[in-house]
Length: 576
Image (cartoon, rainbow, N blue to C red; front, side, top):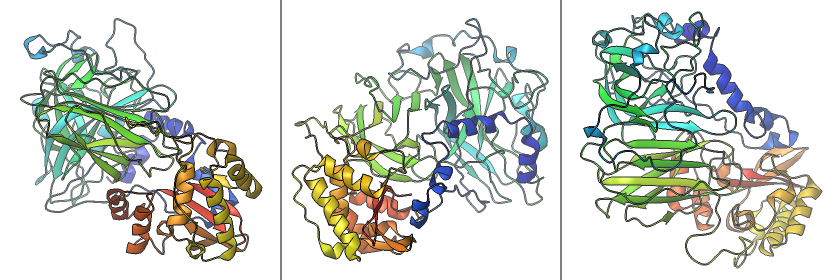
């Protein structure tokens, strides 16, 4: 049976698919692709479709990443006497658990077998024909794919989405999957058992396979196994499939990474890891800390307005807590990472990456574990999309780490920034930066207004030409309002037009469009000189430029300006 066959047979009652479409509808501006194609002005834009490339992977050491950043839209369907959903989505501070829970009994939830339907098979598991079912003895959960293996190599963590509608939570865990016979086209899953009985068969990875790197331990050959906060062994109604709303009760579990390689014969088989211990309590799901971590005093701050994402890792107790919470999208401006790390060794550093969801990281920072607050340089890139915060490497001594992605307020512990980001910039426009006299004249006018911090002039220029701003999600009055310390638009306009060279890319209404910086065009996307321009102009750090250049799918993802050769200012937004 092929993957397409499985997709066709699971469409009838797919609750997850509907939830994901609902999440897309809730995005600002609706469907992003629809937004792009509905305006004639963007036809001349350099479009690089952001398609997740899911291919058959085979070889001596195959590693495939996969986890969903969003869970099924969740509506509580139980009263206070029933099991609670692990990990309150509004809880954003470090968990307040016992300092030594290993000496205490397991959380006092009912047995998981009391909430599952014994013998039940989710539709994709039934179609798979692998002989798996809810309530089966875990001893019967074995590797059936010859030459394949799976291994758990990281702590369990949660991803909670609070981007409108009901919050939703999913689980993830770093793992490796390797094999030589056949291919692996879907991410591995997390299968849960308690008291020797399988109580959750993992989420449906066949309907829309998305391969991702793990959020904790993304360095090296790590892959990510995924799971949902609702057990797939408890359908909402006995006659209903693929509709789940029951979390596993609080308690101690064994979790296995299970992959589904497709053999050369076309049949699906299983690769099953050794079990790892996981505890579920009111704060979420936790792996044992073991000998890592230690005492910690640093606390994550309260959520601030405009906060986009935060990651909290706590290894100060006997059970690890790791949670990414996503509050919003990067739609404008250049946010910053604010972080703090506390470790038994103050010389330790934690490598944090900002990455598209899904996708490769477009910027990374090393956060010192000296207990001092760290504020990054501006995070350039991401466009109108959700981003992940990934911890690529975490030394064993780290006891507590938190990081937030927030609008850039200019507060780095020094003097407060001015009202205009271009204030004090010593820049001048060079006519040689434009291959067109008409486009160059408008570019010079924009630079003059930006360096003068003249909001009326900038708004007038944009409104006069009907400029598309931030993919038409903002008016000129919104984009060029002062102060702009959170968006840096005035400085960005000036740096783009004075520090980089424009290149012709496409036409609109018979007039070619000149685009700054030229590295955003197909012609110059691999030009050493063009990449150096955005670094020298202060638009990207060298590390950011190297990371974006290495991403052959997206390339440059910073801000761009397009001006027609007739002098019409056509757009100013993030590169897409």
